[in-house]
Length: 70
Image (cartoon, rainbow, N blue to C red):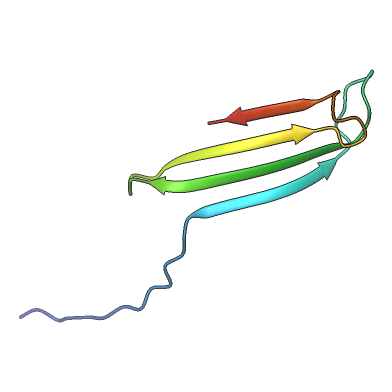
């Protein structure tokens, strides 16, 4: 009456991260920006996510330091 099927699943931790270097600056600031981000998906098995991002100006670290999270 019922067919039993077996599936092989490659389960991975839902964590993603990245590093980006770009030149998206404002007119009166140093050019280079370094951005690091980390994201965790599927929190509580409900497809929620949490992320954290940090941005800095590597040429002058006191000029730009931004933390953001969602």
